Length: 333
Image (tube, rainbow, N blue to C red; front, side, top):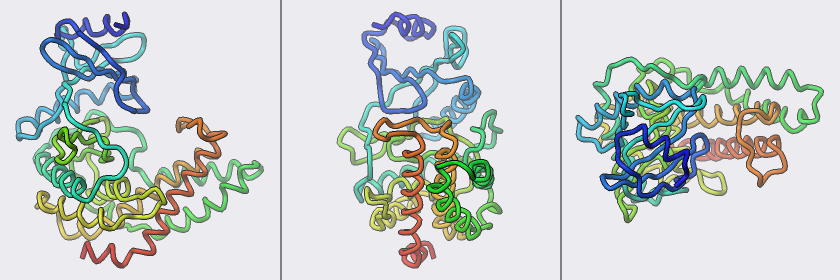
């Protein structure tokens, strides 16, 4: 066993680890699957930025468990702290939920089942009223993303990148003028914040969702942005079109359990997808200029090339949304 990991685990009251293995494909945290005689755990190294979220994660997971929703739980250190600080970073330990993780797009049955579970998850949090100690700066803040893009574009007028990025900026800013102003008037609810499919755990055969994981984005958001982002993630095909069969079954599954959703929230879910997708395009386009935020995928020559390409992909999704908007809005009438 890695001596560093062994020393960190000694801070937690879990007995001797029989094995520790790197786990998952997360980009932000180093993660290990830990087995002991008494159980299985997930050990993650988190940066100082995320450590304040531990109070919220502990509180919300206790609330979910009390409501009968299966969830990972925080394991405090021997000293009672929610994380263990070492060398300027922090380590957290949570219980491991056995099962399957699904990458890519869900099948139609998986989408319906998973969205129904999310409806139960959201329902369980309706009466969670504690204030949050942490919020990821700039997260789901579309006006901030658009403002940052304007600044980056203006600062790079003489750059070689301008010829590639400026036409994308023009399209993004044009679309930004058409975003719904109604979403911002809706009540904010306690929500997960990142409903991509691999943040769900399924049973071993991948048919039934059993839990949500990765609670760093917990917070209060408007529902159309939450579900719109989920649909963007689940319905976008490899050709950057929207799979409307997955869309339809996803909202049917969600609505079967989320009986609290208002008519305005339901109607504005398509606008939530449009806003979240445009916000992502703005963020990637700004970083195509600046090359300092997103991690570089070595499949691309440069971070500039990568981020410009991803911007184009998000805009392609929006173009397909435009083509199918009438059908999509009919599903939310």
